[in-house]
Length: 373
Image: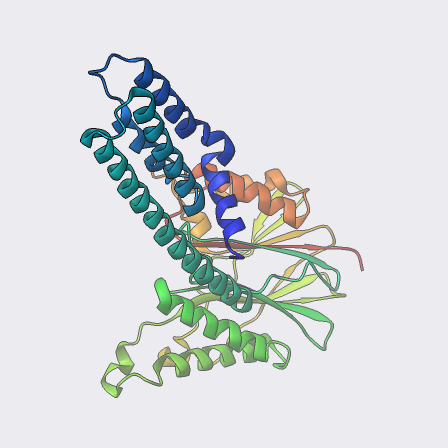
């Protein structure tokens, strides 16, 4: 089947080169034959041959396992012929046992391969869904160079509650969204998809960031509550922290609305500045429920050569073995001269080292450098 080559390739990468590993069962068959033929009549090593197909099943597919089983049976027949015991009940029982064990090993291989093919198909669908929901950020947008990094907490997961997106407007500016949906699992993924869809549909149409924030909040609240019973409306706890940004092409500034999200970092050379807004609004999803019907825009300098870093709390709340948080603001200036892609590679490697390869929460980072117009 078409999937088989990739299946064998993944096994080879994980366990080593398959032909090299075949030396083990083949060597066992040869050694058993030689020793059994030369040994005294009362010593029988034929039963060891069952180990050959049993070992092969660990790293090879059904065909190779069946071949190894056939070689083991042939070796047992050869031993019986050379020792003149082929017609004895003991040797015939050993041959029958080899046939049964080989058949079981081949069956195990076939079941395992079928399940791996199914898993591969599921992962392919998941990757396709990820590419739709969390689309890669554009490498260039006007005078900006942009890169995004997503690090899921679950090793096999591709998407969680952290999100980012970008859009160009008709007013020669780039709008960005970074957010973190409350919770995890399918519910968080669903809400992340909702927020991303609302942003992509309205980011280029809403005239101002406050109007865009109001649109996202209203869309989020409506969609997450429309199917809930009325008695549960007041206890709805679906929300998302987020930052909305608008970066004009010609003005060296960045406009932002912060909805309960960690503030961005601005790197200018080796100096780092936290863009802490005067007003931090409630997360998306709370909006009018707590009396907030408007959003204030904060403006910060963003000049040519500056590097703007957006991130979720999975970065700054990552702990090492001693329980110490990742010192993001202290580490970031070490890579400030790199382009956004290189910066994120340094950050990813350093963060993984800090947590010893295991994140407790999803982490997303967006790096934006302003270039000369």
